[in-house]
Length: 302
Image (cartoon, rainbow, N blue to C red):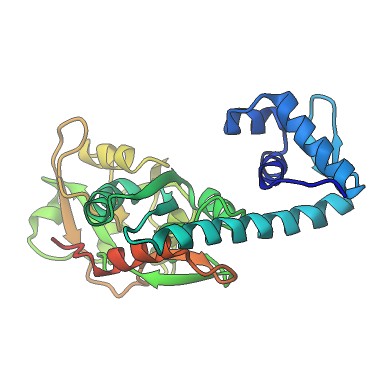
């Protein structure tokens, strides 16, 4: 049998995950013919047809290719784990950690977590990717990320969840001069529900914030929605309604210079815990575990 390489497997897995040789070429910064040759060599080596090429419509796996992809992904995972654990076990910790993070919370915490971690472990490389939760979870399951940094909402049972000591209770966001902000104490969901709502429209946040109200039989009118937390803040700052958020920026000023009030909510609500997650089937590499340990020891309220 002819030999195959991990590089060939990596090219093949990337084509499968992007469903396109052209897209894999862009992602890997490798010429398309090189990727095609690598896959052809794999098919010749193992005597199996792995991919079906669809003219101008990407590729799909054959039944043999599906089984081959699962085994290739596992071998690539083991290779990555071996490399990172070996590097981290050297006298000076080295290696790489790839983190997928929920875009709504990433800017508030991850830059300072990474800066602090790099001060302690300067030779461990951090790769950071942010997106919506479903994108982060797909990347985690495909082995693109070692860790996922997100809220513990609608994640299923495929991941282990290491909770982080970050603020997690929802609060009301109001214009600075709003009567509910000026009353000098917490507000109730019933009081908020009489006002128009500006809803953070990303899954699972959208469902979480609406359920806070519906579980108590309340149905606020949603005036505007946006997937951008700063757009939500700006709309509130302009007096277009209230919002409920968990992520709490350290400044109460919006992009366009309006002042906001952060007001506690009196009602009991389901918490939204920030976690570092990884697949149950994959133990974290040593560099990834070092990053988890650092995050768990971090003082988020400082």
